[in-house]
Length: 413
Image 1: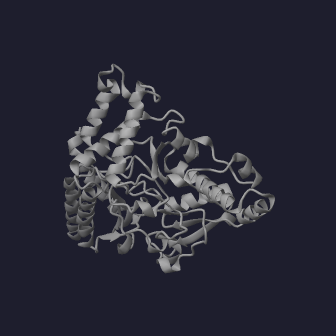
Image 2: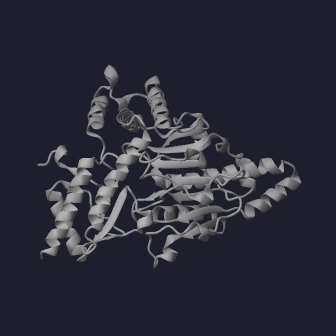
Image 3: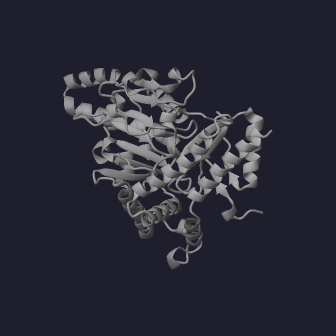
């Protein structure tokens, strides 16, 4: 039976957690801070819970350098719930702004109704997750209100693996939001930097990004975003908590009466950011244990990297470089799936010459060396090495070495 130290885990999520964080959490689960109760047994309304939440928020703000004009929310439902929540809340915020601009009189209401007929939510589709987010917006608001700014499949034979050049993007004027996924885990595509065409101007754009799989791994130009969100289970903690970082000025929502008058859907309270913010993420029973684990991960990162996220960014880039260099050294055996300009540092996706049979051999041999979690997503198959923050440099080196060894074996057959 292998021990924890024998395993080099590259699974796409839930991801590896630091061993010392898990050991600390295990103790807290039985007896938190000598209270005689486990952390999962304490009330979410207790001072203990509030302290855990506030410390995690403060440490996240410190690590990512989040300005004071942003609110940090701990929510539930994963990224899939946020597909709905982002559309609901940013359409609501758009309505609130328009209503304020036009005024409350009857003639202004007619102008608002006309504006609502033509509002757009913009989506940049570069992989499976942004595709699902756009589909959810169409389900909630109708396809007439969803504008596909760009779809990478249109330029890549119907497959994901590129990001269309910005000069080809079809951005709406005054969109309720422009949405993109910063790192697509299934397809191994990552935006190399913030898109120039989305840089802030005096009147927008309202930019929202899903950062579930690359959060905490590189510096973020936070002021360029109206909101970002991410599930904890890749780089922050355990499955069960989702983080939203949003500009406070965009929290207010229009009245229910106004939204009904405009025939627009109203979000469930549990997905309404303004409600969650007012209750310090405690509108309903939040899993304080999951927030605690996230908080311990953040404290470890802050202790490990005096330069905060920049320190982790350097390590993430080094690990990815090691693995990509090993793959590039044997183009006769390995085919890296995404275009080189948009390769993900977090999810390294490739195929092996010889197809499924060769890839099964690769996976089986990897397991004998403790290299696990390498099977590609069921929709695209192949191999995927997820290089999240908790994957050590030693593990990346071991995988790179195996990639070379396996290629040599194939060449000798």
